[in-house]
Amino acid sequence: MASSIVATPAKLAARMTDAEHEDIQTEFFGLFYGGKGVHKRTTAMGLAQKLRGDGEILFAASGNGFSGLDRFPTLKRHTQHLRMDDPRELFQLSKGMRARSKGFEKFTVVVLDDFDSWWQDTLHGYAREKAGVTDDDPLPEIDWTWYGPPQQAMLNTVKNFYKTVGLHVIITSHDQGRPLKSEKGGADRYEPLLGTKLSAGIGHLAHLVGRFESRIVKDPRTKEQKHVTEVQIQPSRYVDAKSRLSNTNEVKVSSVELVKLAAAWVNNGGIERSEGKPEKEVIAEQPDEGEDEDFEVDDDDLDG
Image (cartoon, rainbow, N blue to C red; front, side, top):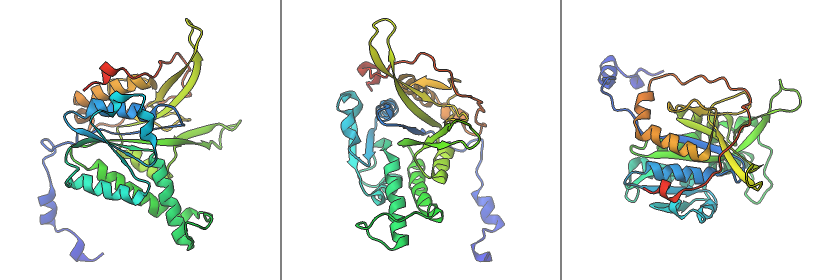
């Protein structure tokens, strides 16, 4: 390596900071993932409303997911909607946000909805470029060596949002099940529908990674069927998850409870207290299936 690009001892000393009084990033970073119709988007926006303070929310989407919020008008308050079909625009957005360019000064929360769609488009675009085919041609078989550059490009985009001062970041994604080779009977391990390195990179940055799951149960009192949603926030053999929330040790919580727990943790200084501490190691086998709470949006609860 050329000596001209190596910092001198004097420059290294100048870059040192007083760890005791160093400013700590206090913005939340989370990844919510799961199948279709499991309230990832409404939960993300419910939390965004709790975290926005006096600022605005930017809901950036790769599709028409914003229309799914029509039934919950309180979740759309103080929110700007931006649809971007081209993932290259997402990178430009991240640059504008990090620089706090004109038009981006007021945002305190960004929700990146259906992030996996941008990832798939980036991967496919790179594969077509490597194979020398156009968008009108069939998608070529993707060589495993082609995954690296598009994953790094997407991670660079994510890091721009992550490094934006005063900006909370919430990402939503679909999930995928990968067969566990050591398991008989075809058991799967669930993780975000992203590249392995991209998913790991986002997970490393995140304070919270939760897998959403919804199912139909019968109300024991009314005998009526209803949907219930729960979020696994601690990792297990079967689910990729992570939580730095110090105000709960639960493996699974309801989506409503997740909003309350995460907002309380952030707004009460939980991020500052958690920095530098090792993550809790939770050994969770397949969690017991107990009673779940309905996902519902309480207008009064989400005000402000």
